[in-house]
Length: 252
Image (cartoon, rainbow, N blue to C red; front, top):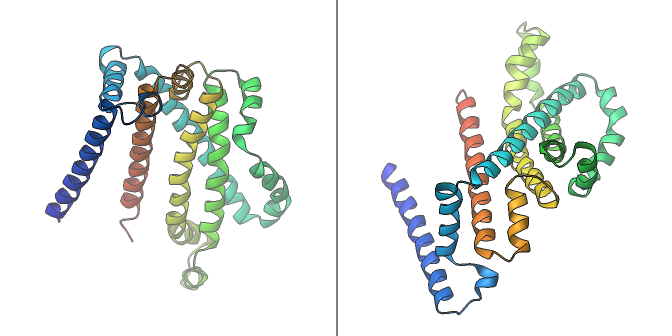
């Protein structure tokens, strides 16, 4: 199994190396305009300067990651709590559903200027955008996951003498974990998208703010470098959530 995995990794590395080599050759032969595509060697030089020589990107990366994690935690905790309330008290859900539907339909990035007025250019406005995106995703998956639990399992547990508390914590909630985690994984990505999107509009620090500056100065090597960095960051958080989910679901 490890041999197959090593072979797969080697294939991916070779494919990426070939792509970068062709890209570099195309830029040096001027088959492509560097103004629009950048150059792999220039992208590597920008990242080296940002993280090793000048180390200026560490601060902006820290702001973006901190905003993402804070947004994810706040949105997820609030959504999980409200989702449990909705499941236990359906009348509360029916009363709040029209208002939540209207709020969810609003494009959150369009609300970013309003959040900037309320919370300023700092981290608060970025967290507000990211939290608003994560909240509705986790809420929908929490309610769907709990209500999607097989009623046969619930009935069987009750017939065996389980209390409502035992049924919820030992049957309902564990069975809903896969669906809830799907929402959490997606919410983490959307938290990052919300934070970076708000940084692109206006910010003091953050990768999005740097990306907006580089784009305005036509520094395509920097733009492509940050896009690659954001893609790598997204892959890391996704893989991290996947591993956490597998660890929590070993009992299945």
